[in-house]
Structure formats: structure tokens, C-alpha cells
Length: 109
Image 1 (tube, rainbow, N blue to C red):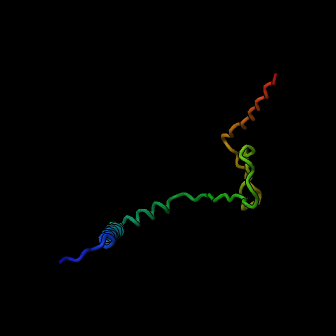
Image 2 (tube, helix red, strand yellow):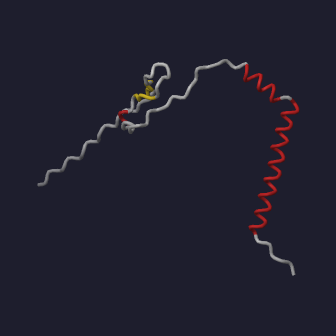
Image 3 (cartoon, rainbow, N blue to C red):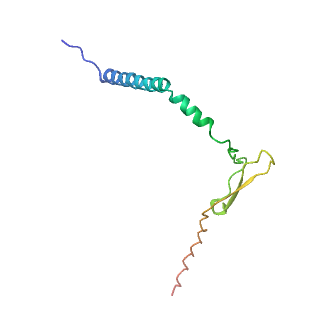
């Protein structure tokens, strides 16, 4: 009589087979890049890129953010040179919702 193989064993074998095929194809792609000289071509393109002064703007998160309706501009970051913060303006400030009038009680007879 044949022994029953649990589903988990079939699932495990399928996952291991997928990982083996994926790893083989990934490795073949890397080897192909190295043999064709594509890495050197990409390095020369990056070397020719102009230098920039781009840097990440760090938000000052030491305090809570203001409420959303007051968030028309927010001071963020600090310049390395001057130490002053930048002002980030909200380009599409939403109008503050006007409070809806409360219904007046109807006069009782």
C-alpha cells in the first residue's frame, strides 16, 4: 500500500523548486551583464552625471504637527550652511469647513 504524502510536503517541494529556478535565472542575468560589459557601460553613464547639491530635508518632529486646517505652511529641515529652517508651503490649502448652523428649536405652542 502507498504511503500518503501530506499537502504540506507538496507545497514545500513546489516552493523549493520555484526558489531554485528563480535563483538560477537571477544568477544567469548577473553573469550575462558581467560578460557583455553592461556594468562598465552603466558605470560610465553614472560617472558622466552632473554633480548636484541635492539633500534630504529633515522635518522637525520634536513637537506635534498643527491641526490640518492650520497647516497652510510648515517649517521643515535645517540648512547645513545657515542652520535656518525651510518653509514648505501647502500648494492646495483646503478651505476650512464652515461650521454648520445648529437647528433652532421650534417654538412650542
